[in-house]
Amino acid sequence: MRFLSTVALIAILAGPAPSAESSARALPEPAANGNPEMRLSQLPGDTVPRSGAESEGAGSFTGAGREAIVISEALLQRPPARTDSTLDDLFVRLGEAEDAAEARGVVLMINRRWLRSGSDTADLLMSRAQQAMRERDHALAVELLDRIVAMQPDWAEAWSRRAVAFHRLGDPLAAMADIHRTVTLEPRHFTAWAGLGHILREAGDEAAALASYEQALSLHPYMPRLEPLVEKLRRDLYGLDL
Image (tube, rainbow, N blue to C red):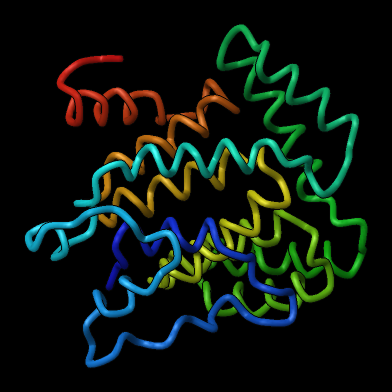
């Protein structure tokens, strides 16, 4: 699996979201002569200084974690595309949850709200896509989710589910594009932020991964298995628990 550098990954989140009519599989053209640095140097906002050694691998860009935090904060300032007072109340309850058991119940209700598209046809296709994912037929899941996002381009959960399918198919760039759309539509989507962290960690950028994980935890403080991972990354990066 080939990963782009941190700057390329962050540029996807910062750039315009893909249209509903275009598939997230419409990836950027390969870099000239197969040299990714030639393309990265043309990305807008790519102003992070790099030494010769730093330009050779992912995860070597200084300040990547801070950039990820800036992006996440900007996205969180945007109101959700779908106003839902019940969902707003659920997030208040999640933030005030006193333990993991209470949080699990609230998250279950949030997930149920996220899974409502408002279209019986889209909901049926989603159930089939979920079944395909359970059967590990991720290509079929993507095909079904393609139809869903074309029908319901403002349904954040459809973009999030397709991001997972793309990631499992070994296409992190397409997954990143769909995560961008997800958090643009629903900035509180803690699952998408955690997924972003996983992709960045796999790419070797632990600082940016940590920023994404912390964003997820700020929204869902009891997210399973995430707090120990965050503590480990903090120790690895800074040598102490923050």
